[in-house]
Length: 449
Ligand code: PLP
Image (tube, rainbow, N blue to C red; front, top):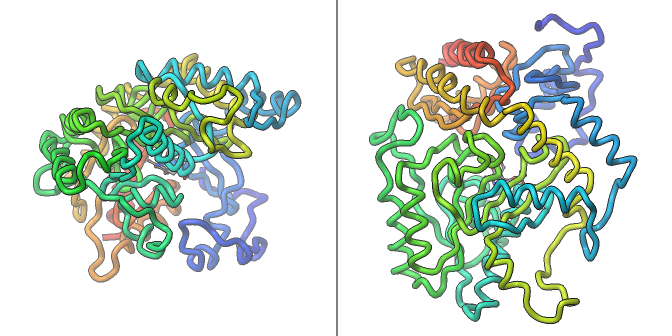
């Protein structure tokens, strides 16, 4: 399978230098670009420029849950481009966007019935934060401007998102651009209490009570919203402790604070339900989404909003713009058409059931690594899993980076951040492929120890 493709390119044929790559060690990549240049994808596999086949262990970047190259998506894109390739969402609409909003509202928890579209997870977060502040202002509580995020949270790279986010490397360089009036809850991971938990850890619900401390410090009348990922994906599949999200919901309700679930990763099946809200049995006031809604094929994000938040904005003269916010590509007809066909495919092919069926397969496979040298922790929920590796002393992140390189040699595209390796295979993966992925991971861990 990994035999060199006859038309393979080598690095001398690829000029990577003009390209400034996001979230990448540019110099390491550019030393040998062909190794990590992807030229095609089908099903659960990528093909590199060198002709190597790689199993897609993270569904692209948590987004290609249906696998790659589905002809139904390609056909929809073509037809939509020929029918209506662009229409602004300012004062106008198109049928695909109307239909998608209706469908997403129907799939979301009851009471969250309005959908605002944007183009990425980062935009969805900044949109939700603006909505929260605007909502309180319109209700006459203009002092509620403070936003509460969580340590180790990832909410994209917009100014709002990095402000409420809790990943220091993403924040430290940009302090002057960050929002004032932000605070953070503690993260929910604790090695001594929850190492190697399967699914939701039993310990840690009380960490939500830290919100009481922040309310006592700042006063509820200054706090607009709390934003958390139900399962924090980017910092390594941090699974919410049992009862934690419920407690957070209770406290937000008690203090009149909006609760935003950032479901950019959880949304559309990753945790075995349409949304993490349903998986964990907690209804927030807003849900942000992106990624899987279009299977990653076309950029799209959005915010699903509780009715009375929407209704609060619907005041003043009917012709006047109620929410001064939106993007040129909000509700893009190509993205919306793909969103509609993605929902069709999930429904027709039973992919939520498939994700639920594969969950114990992934759980058993990944936890079989427990006890292997250098593995500090293993976590999983839905079709998501992560392992933490013992770092190389003095070089944080290097061990996992080496594992990433080893993975490519072995035919697996692993995603690493810090010394964590995250996996979120496509829902179309077979049980055998999940087993092979974990076997490959075991070999790679051995190689880098
Ligand atoms: N929010 C969460 C929870 C995410 O995981 C991500 C990306 O991984 C984002 C926001 C940002 O999304 P994007 O990269 O589409 O801006």
